[in-house]
Image (cartoon, rainbow over all chains, first blue to last red; front, side, top):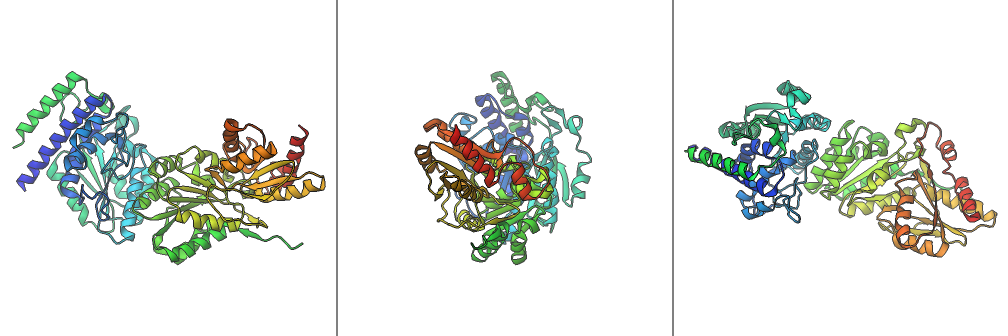
Length: 277
Length: 312
């Protein structure tokens, strides 16, 4: 157990390094939300989900849909570490001809479906979950959303429907880092009381620290046990997590690091990696 | 002369769904609280496990359709044409079409002949909304039999489709040709000009041909049921042969079949093309017949336009 947690922490840190490196090469992209969602994605792909990088269309695989498509660097890095494609491909992020598009395209190995236009992902995941129920499959569907994203009305349509259809094979995760492009979520368009909202829509809600690997694993495992209700994990996170000058800084929602910022960030992440033991 | 058969295309749609549902357990049907009107309720009664009502939430329905299709389901998603296109346009573009998923959007209540419900419910822009999106194919069947052929064909054809049906009963055409996506056909040849039509306007064009015949004018009539991809071969042949064309549709003249024909011909063989369609206006309440007259969509209007074009 101890080992598993340590491995996940290390992997998350490695994902962060890759995020910084690929965004620096790309010259544009979204570090803040990629860094805040790192542990969530790492825990899913490296521990929770049944999937096979060698057989991406395996019908029984668990599905992951990145509704907050702009945070694809975190997904791409994780997919590469899992062996979906060579690590070297990460250098092509956002480049002409690359499969690693600025927002996910399903041609990228391991990406279930395209995303990027916010607010649609939970519905897409709901469709996958309905198909799973129809086919009497055991697979689960995970959908990662941003906090700003859930201001979209489509999300609440999906919230209603997932509970209506008792989709206990559906697990949503909100990366609650508190910032969106225009500023603090509570100032742009307040979401609170968020737990009550999801509960009142008929969801099982788990709140946890989205950077605490053990807490996340516990939340995901708890969700598996819930019957006849979908689960929403509200993961409290830090935007830009792991890089001191990016943490809680809205500017890094959609700005890639400069060469100098990259060096400092990688140094900080190296130090963190040394401290995981 | 025997009375022309008139059928609800949406009845046929519902019946065809039931037939297909028996043949293929992979078919699922979605609706957004209009299953009685769209006739998907027929499928829901037979196959309640494979029918999902999304309530009044079209965006959720379309994006969920994408998710279902990604897991191998053949998805039919229905509501009124107004609500099947404008409201969930982003979901259709980004979740269905960008992913090139096997979703068949079958909308009923397209066009002005929705009638009494008035302008808010008369979809006159639906084809225009969707026509610019890559991967989607758009079909407007001319009668209930063609609607059945369309549904059966798109069921077997992978990828996203938009099928537009009406609310009212439509007359059955006297001729039928084998239905092929993207292939129009001639209902009659003529001498003076050619009319290209889709949906209920095909029958109006046939009637217009009768009116004009009495005046010594002989028009060709083509049914182009597939707006996208356009049957360029047939359109070009008609342009070359007749030099003057009229395009008829129960839609705004901007963005639909007329636009499609003009966009194509302007690049390869520019000829005079006139439009019989709704001209940049909203509809209003009234009987389908009253509205067809008022908005100049009837056979009379087509005949009038033909005479005008021939005088030029």
